[in-house]
Length: 161
Image 1 (cartoon, rainbow, N blue to C red):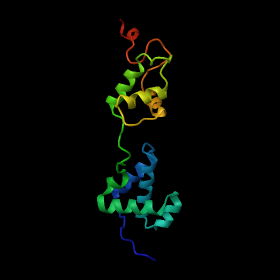
Image 2 (image 1 turned 45 degrees about the vertical axis):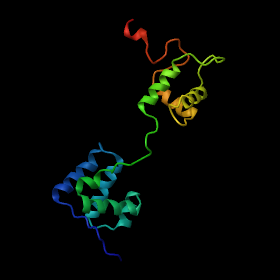
Image 3 (image 1 turned 60 degrees about the vertical axis):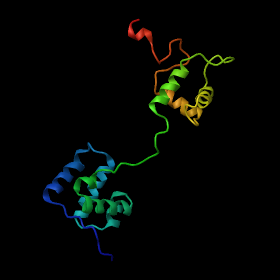
Image 4 (image 1 turned 90 degrees about the horizontal axis):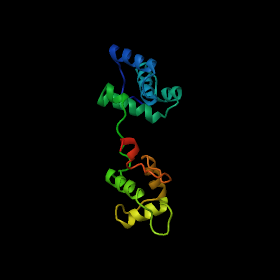
């Protein structure tokens, strides 16, 4: 049997706080699982037993133990920020798209399509590349409706003009 490197021993205050944390149900499920891991680890249960009991991976149990021992009580409960992909479309680019969608469509077209908007944004060098589905997703954020006579960019009827 391997010897545990990171041993969890909770103080009475931490134990009570974790019990309240688990029973209130106002926290994220992942945080509640981390609290349960700490409680079971404090009871002396092994990583495989905790993992099986809570339905999590053994690695998760190990990481929670390690964060508790190295970074402290609150760090073990919280989640580190995830990097994710950098944002490629800025607010300024969204404004250009909305403005473009509110203009008259190109010659020979009755209305703007997502593909036309995407192609025009690339041609105007607002972005290097953009898909029509991204254009659609970004326009959904606005109140823009290409089928109405009044666009969502600026609606005079709502302002009282």
